[in-house]
Image 1 (cartoon, rainbow, N blue to C red):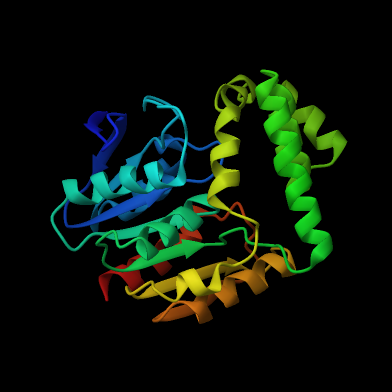
Image 2 (image 1 turned 180 degrees about the horizontal axis):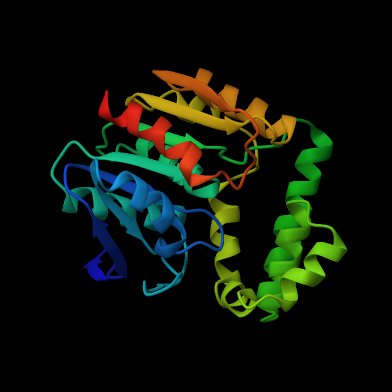
Length: 259
């Protein structure tokens, strides 16, 4: 992997595949650049695809204190590394990061996001999100990364039985190693509501995609995001969930980014 230096001096590891118009892929919680490799491989025949380790993940550095603005600067540095215009795709909290970067004025071309996880719709949701943030911060301050990972997985709906299986999986140590970055994703998501006013300043064309089998709250959030940006379009992938199949998503992205 190659590395560049972000504005605050943090090294960011990235990899480039293929040739053509530049396209940067931004992962979500627990992910590294390798997490997006299957999708990158499908897009590489058509684009110069850049995957990267977000700060605190994989081979990238991590400079305290964390701020969402620093992650925006990381993405801006990657965009600046490529020949303009640069298309950008993000999934989950990575999708929220892409939208925040666009709202912050990072010069990007077309944007596509898959299920930015804004799911707060009422006072009960808001209280639950705040309680999660407090509990996550407490676990991480105690150095309990396993507890933080379990808390997040419970939040996204894993049953105790499935969680027990995940803990026994070979990938569990890798998840625990980056569990401290769950606080970063939590910060990116703000209070969990769709930042409608903030999204109104997003200028590039945006494709917002969701899965037809995903929770209704997440699908409604995707529609709200598409309505909130200036040039938004919404699309649903039948039968897909939050862990979207790359072979289903890739043709949709290829069509949108090649337009």
